[in-house]
Length: 204
Image (cartoon, rainbow, N blue to C red):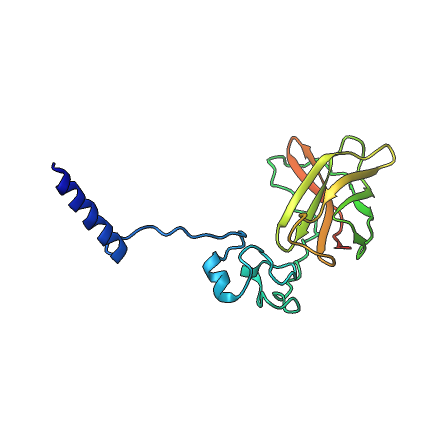
């Protein structure tokens, strides 16, 4: 191929690109990672480099009015987790072994208490060797079970430390969490879970 033919091909390709006849991928940029790309942020008047422009604790893409800190998305109250003891699984044994009544109770923090983001949960119930786990429910993360080698002592008292109730970002003072304690007993013909009553705490 001659040089003048190559020059002609390059010129034609450049003309098609500039006129839009050849389609090119356009990269969508979301600088602050809040779910709105930078172009939409500019149209809405929000800051493309700040996920929460009005500073009300809600990302711009989740905020009813991202420019007014007094108008957040309507608060959704978490639905309390059922506290009834689960029914035992069906067994093949005609006479199932009796199940001892292990009652768990959270003694600290108190219901409706104000606590830090990372807190300690203590209580009583159970016996040595029974692992205690803490269930945490928040409106954004939903429910999660936290474990950390926590066991009752000889008096049935236990203490779960460094329980992270809320993430370090995205929440602010006054948000609530629902927690309860849980332990599971396994035997050859059944597995039974025992739970404390729910308590609700607030970040403060």
